[in-house]
Amino acid sequence: MLAERGGPEVVEPILSQLSSPHPAQVQAAMEAIGSLRDEGALARLFSLVPFYPKELIAEALLSYGSGIIPQVGPLVTADDPTLRAWAVDILCQIEAPSVEVFLREALRDPQALVRAAAGVALARRGQATGELLALLRHETEVSVKCALAEALAEAGREEASPVLGDALLQLADLRLPWDARMRLWQSLVKALEKLGSLEKALKRLASLSSASLQRWLEIGIVLVDVDVLCLVLYYLGARQETVAALEKVWQDYGQRPLSEGLEKGLARGGVHREAALEASKRLYPPAQAPGGEELKTRAHPLEWKEMETRLTELLRGQKGEARAARAPGRPPEWKQMEAGLAELSEAQKRWDETEAALAKLFQVEAREMRAPPRKAPPPQAGRPSVPAPDDWEVGLLEARQVLSQLGAEAGGRVPPGLARQLLDIVSFRLVPQVLAAAKKGDEALVAFLSHLVEAAPIQLLSVAPFRPEPAIKQLWASDSFLSWARTTMASRDPERRLRGLALIGWAPGPGLSPLLLQALQDARPPVRLLAVNVLSAHLARLPSATAPGKST
Image: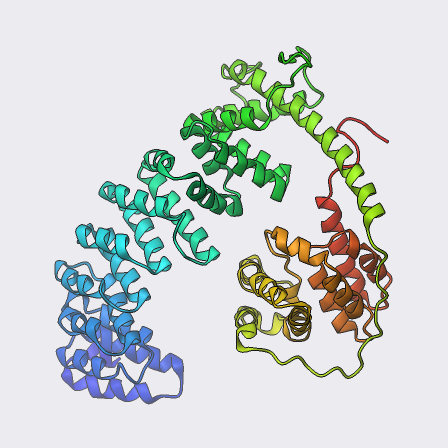
C-alpha cells in the first residue's frame, strides 16, 4: 500500500518494516523500496548493505537498472572481497556500455571468483577481447581459465583459438593436481571443438617430444576420452604413443569403455568416424598366417547379426531417417565398413580366447607361488585412537560438507551429484594420501588406514576410486595391507568391520577373497550386504573364463 502511494514520505515507513522478525515482511519491504525508484530510497538501500543479505538488496537495486552503476561500479575496488564479488555480480546483470570499464577493472582482482565472473560477462558482451586473451594466456587459476575458455567459445570468438590451442599443448608440462588438469583438458577441448579449431590444435601435438606426448595422453587415459585419443592417433599418423594410450585404456578400464568410445566416434560421423576406424585397425590387426600373409574369411562371425542391426540403426539415425520411411536393406555406407568390422570382431574373439587362457595360467601360477597367509592377530581391545595429522582431515572435512547437504536423509541413498563429489574426494584426496603413507612405511600406512576406518563417513569409504592406480592394486595385495585387513575384519565391533570391508572394496584382489567370503557370513546384515556388492563388482571385472560362443 505504501509503495503504491509513492513519494519520499513513504521511504521511512517502508524501511521501518525491515526490522520485522518475519522474513516475508522484510522481503516485501525490499521489493517495495525497489519499486519506488526514488533517489533517497536508493541511497538508503546502499546504507543497508552491511546489515542485510546482499542477495536481497541486489534484487531491489536491479529494479533501478543502469541508474545504480555510479554507486555499484566503484565497489569493484572495495577492500572486502565479498563486496567486490557482489558488485561484479550485479554489474554483470546490467546491459549498459558504462559497465565495461568496471568489469575491466575486475579482471585484475586478486580473487579468482571475481576475475572469472567479470571475464565471462565481458566475453558474452563481445568486449575487451584483447584483455581477455591476455588473462587466458597468463591466468594460473584453473577455474578462471576454464570459465574464460568456455565463455569465449560460446560467444564464437574465433580469435581465441590460438591461445586455447597453446593452453591445450602446455597441459603436458603444467604442474597441476590431477583433478585440475582433467577439468582444464575438458574445458579446452570443448571450447576448441565449439570454435571448429580442435583439429588444428591436436595436429600441433606432433611437435611434442615422446615423453611430453605421453604425459599429455595420460590425461585422456584417466578421463577415458576415447574419442579425443582416436583423433590424436588419426592426426599424428598413428604414432606409437597414441596407440599405446588406447591400449592403456583397454588395460586399465576393460573392453567396454573402449568399445563405447569407438561407437561414439562412428556415430558422430565425419573425421570422428574416420579416426575410430583407424584406431580399430591399429587395435585389432588382421590375423597373420605362419608365412606372414593375412588370414581372411568370407564368413561372418557369430556376433555379426547383432552388430549389423546396431550399426544400421546408428547410420540411419545419424541421417535422421524416420523408422517407417526406411527402405529395407543396408545403407550405402555399410560396404565401406563391412570388411573392417568383420576383421575387428574376429580379432576380438581371438583376443578374448587368448586372454582367458592367460588368465587361467596366471591364476595357477599365482596359487603356486603365493606364500601361506599369515594368521590374523587377535583384535586389539581398547586400542588408543591414532593421532591424526591435520592434512589427514582435509578430505574427510570435504566429505562431511558434501554429506551435510543430505540433512535428515544422511543415512539414505546418496544422490548422483553428491556421489560424484565423493568420488572426486576418494580419487584425488584419499588415494594420494594412502600412497604417501605407504611410502613412509608399514606403521604409517596402518595408522592412516585405521584413521579412515575410525573417522571417515561410511558413504565416503563405500565409493571406490574411479581409476584404481596400479600402485593401489599392488598395495592392496601387499602383506602389510592384508595383515591390517585380517585384523580389522576380526574386530568385534561391527561398524569397524563394515568400514574395513568398504576400504577392501577399493581394489579387492585374490588375497582378499577369503575375507570377502568370510564377510558373507557376518552376523550383521549391513556387512553381508556390502560384501555381496563388493564381490559382485569384483567378479564383474574379472576376465571371462571361457571364450565367446563356447560353453563349459
